[in-house]
Length: 238
Length: 181
Ligand SMILES: Nc1ncnc2c1ncn2[C@@H]1O[C@H](COP(=O)(O)OP(=O)(O)O)[C@@H](O)[C@H]1O
Ligand SMILES: [Mg+2]
Image 1 (cartoon, each protein chain N blue to C red):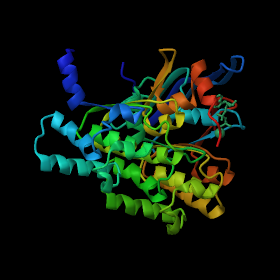
Image 2: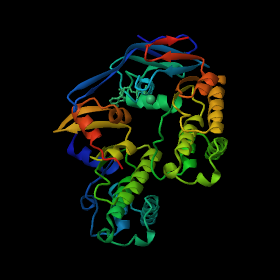
Image 3: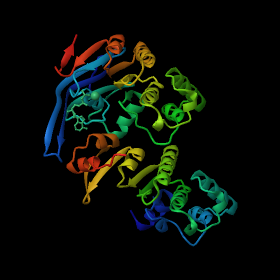
Image 4: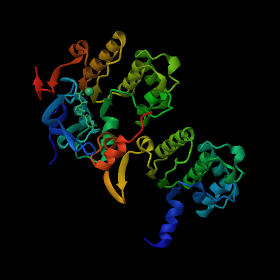
């Protein structure tokens, strides 16, 4: 059966369950969430809330197919198709990630020794964007995120925490993903940069992207959030 | 598959990069000839063309062209692996097997070689099966991962999923044994 989504639903988690069994630590089992259902629509920013350890990052990673849920489905609107990431083949998941699903992780993880500008340009050239245009777009986004041009030719390994996080954000926001998953993208940023990232998120929603995010900062939450889902309680809050 | 067909595929469609360069190179002929003879094996007889292709491939694997007439035995481990890769890719294979291609090399040489393999495999659209025990190599190079233990596949899937959320006790043990840097 082909899964069905309402016309403006971009992402739906259905009866999703995530647990970990730590085989080398006496088989301890951690139940993070179960029977979790949520939907995100075009232009909407859903905020995941809950105390530390509630499972916010685990849910976000499950929506990206970086974690493997024990039960349920993650339905993604991918072009004209609906793909269940819990059942899809690896090549299909990679295709969905390339074109539809962007993810900003809490910490930057990149191929060593690749210059920053190339890292931000690559997602575009991988999709066939003309290299000159790709560099232009990558450069203007890095500038907007206040990464000084003097750093563009260097790999980000030696950058400050905040600079690395902004490179991480640039690598995802350089293309217009239909769905964005954001894990504390503003955590280590100063006020000005936090505002820039808030603007980027609002602009993404404005063009119709569906966003799911974890934000510690109340100001950011108020500025971008349209709804929140409380993980501790396992239900949608107002 | 018949033996003859398998041999033809080995020359035309497949490539093998061995862990030990001595198994994959002919140590008694020059670097240029190591690349050129693979072309001759599939019927190329034009010396000028063969030489030009050899030069082109030695450049693509970032080898010093001044060494084209030297014997592989005089090369460093990293250069020998580059030469093996050039020798394999010159016939434009569609499937390449690599057995621990970077083990035994200095870490800095390893990283450059991995960049090179990643770039070439991506731009040429080659399918690659890599055997390695180095999880850093796995994360950097592969899209899919099969974890083997005692001859059995214990877990397989999308590389980052298997490494970040390993299900099998053996995979969990491997992942938790990575030394922090
Ligand atoms: N890869 C993993 N292996 C084992 N346990 C994990 C893993 N990732 C997260 N957990 C556990 O899942 C629970 C939820 O963690 P997390 O999703 O990071 O919460 P939050 O983001 O809300 O702080 C924690 O108990 C954490 O230890
Ligand atoms: Mg978290």
